[in-house]
Length: 253
Image (cartoon, rainbow, N blue to C red; front, side, top):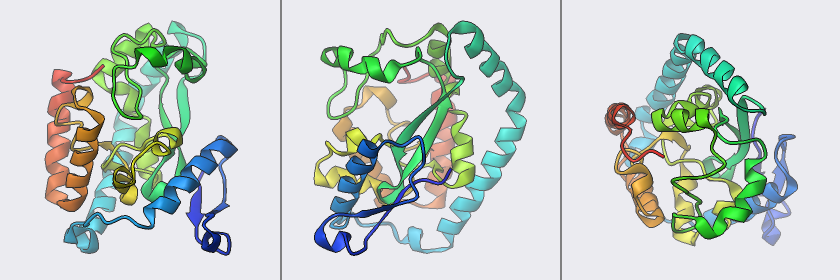
Protein backbone atom coordinates (compact mmCIF):
# COMPACT_ATOMS: atom_id res chain seq x y z
CA UNK A 1 0.00 0.00 0.00
CA UNK A 2 1.35 3.39 -0.92
CA UNK A 3 1.17 6.08 1.70
CA UNK A 4 -0.80 9.30 1.74
CA UNK A 5 0.74 12.35 0.13
CA UNK A 6 -0.49 15.77 1.15
CA UNK A 7 -0.56 17.99 -1.90
CA UNK A 8 -1.18 21.71 -2.24
CA UNK A 9 -4.29 22.37 -4.29
CA UNK A 10 -7.22 24.73 -4.10
CA UNK A 11 -7.75 23.76 -0.47
CA UNK A 12 -4.06 24.27 0.33
CA UNK A 13 -4.33 27.84 -0.89
CA UNK A 14 -6.85 28.37 1.90
CA UNK A 15 -4.49 26.78 4.41
CA UNK A 16 -5.96 23.26 4.27
CA UNK A 17 -3.88 20.58 2.51
CA UNK A 18 -5.80 18.15 0.28
CA UNK A 19 -5.44 14.41 0.76
CA UNK A 20 -5.07 11.70 -1.90
CA UNK A 21 -4.80 7.92 -1.82
CA UNK A 22 -5.39 7.08 1.84
CA UNK A 23 -4.38 3.57 2.99
CA UNK A 24 -7.22 1.63 4.63
CA UNK A 25 -5.23 1.24 7.86
CA UNK A 26 -4.85 5.00 8.34
CA UNK A 27 -7.62 6.73 10.31
CA UNK A 28 -9.14 10.10 9.43
CA UNK A 29 -7.66 11.48 12.65
CA UNK A 30 -4.17 10.43 11.49
CA UNK A 31 -4.81 12.19 8.17
CA UNK A 32 -5.85 15.38 9.97
CA UNK A 33 -2.82 15.38 12.26
CA UNK A 34 -0.36 14.69 9.43
CA UNK A 35 -1.99 17.27 7.15
CA UNK A 36 -1.62 19.91 9.86
CA UNK A 37 2.04 18.99 10.30
CA UNK A 38 2.72 19.09 6.56
CA UNK A 39 1.26 22.58 6.28
CA UNK A 40 3.79 23.79 8.84
CA UNK A 41 6.65 22.16 6.95
CA UNK A 42 6.24 24.67 4.11
CA UNK A 43 8.11 27.23 6.20
CA UNK A 44 11.04 25.00 7.17
CA UNK A 45 14.48 26.57 7.20
CA UNK A 46 16.74 23.54 7.69
CA UNK A 47 19.82 23.75 5.46
CA UNK A 48 20.10 20.49 3.55
CA UNK A 49 23.57 19.20 2.80
CA UNK A 50 24.62 19.77 -0.83
CA UNK A 51 25.01 15.99 -1.12
CA UNK A 52 21.20 15.65 -1.16
CA UNK A 53 21.28 17.34 -4.59
CA UNK A 54 24.09 15.19 -6.04
CA UNK A 55 24.55 11.64 -7.31
CA UNK A 56 24.86 10.54 -3.70
CA UNK A 57 21.09 10.78 -3.20
CA UNK A 58 20.54 8.26 -6.00
CA UNK A 59 23.33 6.07 -4.64
CA UNK A 60 21.61 6.12 -1.24
CA UNK A 61 18.40 4.79 -2.80
CA UNK A 62 20.35 2.15 -4.73
CA UNK A 63 22.04 1.03 -1.51
CA UNK A 64 18.66 0.87 0.23
CA UNK A 65 17.19 -1.38 -2.47
CA UNK A 66 20.21 -3.68 -2.69
CA UNK A 67 20.68 -4.15 1.07
CA UNK A 68 16.95 -4.51 1.80
CA UNK A 69 16.42 -7.07 -0.97
CA UNK A 70 19.43 -9.19 0.00
CA UNK A 71 18.64 -8.95 3.72
CA UNK A 72 15.00 -9.98 3.26
CA UNK A 73 16.10 -13.08 1.39
CA UNK A 74 19.00 -13.96 3.69
CA UNK A 75 17.02 -13.34 6.89
CA UNK A 76 13.82 -15.05 5.74
CA UNK A 77 14.48 -18.24 7.82
CA UNK A 78 15.19 -16.16 10.95
CA UNK A 79 12.09 -14.04 10.39
CA UNK A 80 10.05 -17.22 10.01
CA UNK A 81 11.32 -18.50 13.36
CA UNK A 82 10.57 -15.16 15.01
CA UNK A 83 7.03 -15.20 13.59
CA UNK A 84 6.46 -18.70 14.99
CA UNK A 85 7.77 -17.69 18.42
CA UNK A 86 5.47 -14.64 18.51
CA UNK A 87 2.50 -16.86 17.67
CA UNK A 88 3.37 -19.28 20.46
CA UNK A 89 4.13 -16.56 23.01
CA UNK A 90 0.94 -14.48 22.83
CA UNK A 91 -2.30 -13.94 20.97
CA UNK A 92 -2.48 -11.40 18.19
CA UNK A 93 -0.98 -10.72 14.77
CA UNK A 94 2.71 -11.39 14.07
CA UNK A 95 3.20 -8.02 12.36
CA UNK A 96 2.33 -4.74 14.04
CA UNK A 97 1.13 -2.10 11.56
CA UNK A 98 0.96 1.59 12.42
CA UNK A 99 0.55 4.85 10.48
CA UNK A 100 3.78 6.88 10.54
CA UNK A 101 4.87 10.17 8.98
CA UNK A 102 7.54 9.86 6.33
CA UNK A 103 9.21 12.45 4.13
CA UNK A 104 7.32 15.76 4.15
CA UNK A 105 4.68 14.24 6.43
CA UNK A 106 3.49 11.58 3.93
CA UNK A 107 1.66 8.84 5.78
CA UNK A 108 2.66 5.22 5.25
CA UNK A 109 2.03 1.91 7.03
CA UNK A 110 5.01 1.16 9.26
CA UNK A 111 5.82 -2.51 9.94
CA UNK A 112 7.52 -4.28 12.83
CA UNK A 113 7.28 -7.59 14.66
CA UNK A 114 4.67 -7.31 17.38
CA UNK A 115 6.40 -7.13 20.75
CA UNK A 116 3.41 -6.05 22.84
CA UNK A 117 0.06 -7.53 23.79
CA UNK A 118 -2.73 -7.14 21.25
CA UNK A 119 -4.43 -3.75 21.64
CA UNK A 120 -1.39 -2.19 23.32
CA UNK A 121 -2.04 1.22 21.74
CA UNK A 122 -5.46 1.37 23.42
CA UNK A 123 -3.80 0.78 26.80
CA UNK A 124 -1.17 3.51 26.46
CA UNK A 125 -3.45 6.18 27.91
CA UNK A 126 -3.52 4.32 31.23
CA UNK A 127 0.29 4.52 31.43
CA UNK A 128 0.88 8.15 30.44
CA UNK A 129 1.67 9.16 34.02
CA UNK A 130 4.54 6.63 34.00
CA UNK A 131 6.15 7.95 30.84
CA UNK A 132 9.94 8.15 31.32
CA UNK A 133 10.61 10.19 28.17
CA UNK A 134 10.32 13.92 27.69
CA UNK A 135 8.62 15.69 24.81
CA UNK A 136 5.84 14.08 22.76
CA UNK A 137 7.26 10.54 22.75
CA UNK A 138 6.35 7.70 25.13
CA UNK A 139 8.96 5.38 26.70
CA UNK A 140 8.85 3.02 29.67
CA UNK A 141 11.78 0.84 30.63
CA UNK A 142 9.44 -1.74 32.20
CA UNK A 143 6.38 -1.31 30.01
CA UNK A 144 3.83 -3.94 31.16
CA UNK A 145 2.43 -4.23 27.64
CA UNK A 146 5.62 -5.82 26.32
CA UNK A 147 5.46 -9.60 25.90
CA UNK A 148 8.21 -12.06 26.85
CA UNK A 149 9.16 -12.46 23.20
CA UNK A 150 8.92 -8.71 22.74
CA UNK A 151 11.59 -8.06 25.37
CA UNK A 152 14.00 -10.36 23.56
CA UNK A 153 13.24 -8.86 20.15
CA UNK A 154 13.61 -5.28 21.40
CA UNK A 155 16.83 -5.99 23.24
CA UNK A 156 18.34 -7.40 20.04
CA UNK A 157 16.52 -4.90 17.75
CA UNK A 158 15.06 -7.84 15.79
CA UNK A 159 11.56 -6.35 15.96
CA UNK A 160 12.68 -3.83 13.31
CA UNK A 161 13.41 -6.43 10.59
CA UNK A 162 10.03 -6.07 8.78
CA UNK A 163 10.96 -2.44 8.08
CA UNK A 164 13.30 -3.78 5.40
CA UNK A 165 10.09 -4.13 3.38
CA UNK A 166 9.30 -0.45 4.04
CA UNK A 167 12.80 0.38 2.77
CA UNK A 168 12.37 -1.74 -0.36
CA UNK A 169 9.05 -0.02 -1.10
CA UNK A 170 10.57 3.42 -0.68
CA UNK A 171 8.61 4.38 2.45
CA UNK A 172 11.85 4.56 4.43
CA UNK A 173 15.61 4.44 4.07
CA UNK A 174 18.17 2.33 5.91
CA UNK A 175 19.41 5.52 7.59
CA UNK A 176 17.45 8.64 8.47
CA UNK A 177 15.36 10.27 11.20
CA UNK A 178 13.04 7.79 12.91
CA UNK A 179 9.49 8.06 11.43
CA UNK A 180 7.10 9.40 14.10
CA UNK A 181 3.39 8.73 14.59
CA UNK A 182 1.03 11.57 13.55
CA UNK A 183 -0.05 12.29 17.15
CA UNK A 184 3.58 12.98 18.11
CA UNK A 185 4.18 15.25 15.11
CA UNK A 186 1.09 17.27 16.01
CA UNK A 187 2.85 18.20 19.27
CA UNK A 188 6.16 19.19 17.64
CA UNK A 189 7.45 22.72 17.77
CA UNK A 190 7.96 24.24 14.30
CA UNK A 191 11.74 23.62 14.32
CA UNK A 192 11.23 19.98 15.31
CA UNK A 193 9.07 19.33 12.23
CA UNK A 194 12.09 20.03 10.06
CA UNK A 195 13.32 16.48 10.76
CA UNK A 196 10.62 15.32 8.30
CA UNK A 197 12.16 16.94 5.21
CA UNK A 198 14.07 13.72 4.33
CA UNK A 199 13.00 10.04 4.32
CA UNK A 200 12.83 8.36 7.72
CA UNK A 201 15.17 5.48 8.49
CA UNK A 202 15.51 2.21 10.37
CA UNK A 203 18.60 3.63 12.04
CA UNK A 204 19.93 7.13 12.42
CA UNK A 205 22.45 9.39 14.07
CA UNK A 206 20.72 9.48 17.47
CA UNK A 207 20.29 5.69 17.54
CA UNK A 208 24.07 5.33 17.51
CA UNK A 209 24.60 8.23 19.90
CA UNK A 210 22.72 6.97 22.94
CA UNK A 211 19.40 5.61 21.63
CA UNK A 212 16.83 5.58 24.47
CA UNK A 213 19.25 7.36 26.83
CA UNK A 214 18.88 10.70 24.99
CA UNK A 215 16.29 13.39 25.63
CA UNK A 216 13.80 14.17 22.86
CA UNK A 217 15.43 17.54 22.16
CA UNK A 218 18.82 15.85 21.81
CA UNK A 219 17.31 13.32 19.38
CA UNK A 220 15.83 16.03 17.17
CA UNK A 221 19.05 18.08 17.17
CA UNK A 222 21.00 15.00 16.07
CA UNK A 223 18.44 14.39 13.28
CA UNK A 224 18.84 17.97 12.05
CA UNK A 225 22.62 17.66 12.25
CA UNK A 226 22.35 14.52 10.10
CA UNK A 227 20.23 16.36 7.52
CA UNK A 228 22.58 19.33 7.34
CA UNK A 229 25.77 17.26 7.07
CA UNK A 230 24.50 14.20 5.22
CA UNK A 231 26.68 12.27 2.80
CA UNK A 232 26.79 8.67 1.63
CA UNK A 233 29.89 8.09 3.74
CA UNK A 234 27.97 9.30 6.82
CA UNK A 235 25.26 6.70 6.12
CA UNK A 236 27.86 3.95 5.83
CA UNK A 237 29.45 5.07 9.09
CA UNK A 238 26.06 5.03 10.87
CA UNK A 239 25.31 1.53 9.54
CA UNK A 240 28.59 0.24 10.98
CA UNK A 241 27.94 1.97 14.31
CA UNK A 242 24.39 0.59 14.31
CA UNK A 243 25.71 -2.96 14.06
CA UNK A 244 27.99 -2.29 17.04
CA UNK A 245 25.15 -0.72 19.07
CA UNK A 246 22.86 -3.68 18.34
CA UNK A 247 25.52 -6.26 19.26
CA UNK A 248 26.27 -4.49 22.55
CA UNK A 249 22.55 -3.72 23.19
CA UNK A 250 23.60 -0.16 24.10
CA UNK A 251 20.68 2.09 25.03
CA UNK A 252 18.03 -0.42 23.95
CA UNK A 253 14.85 -1.20 25.93
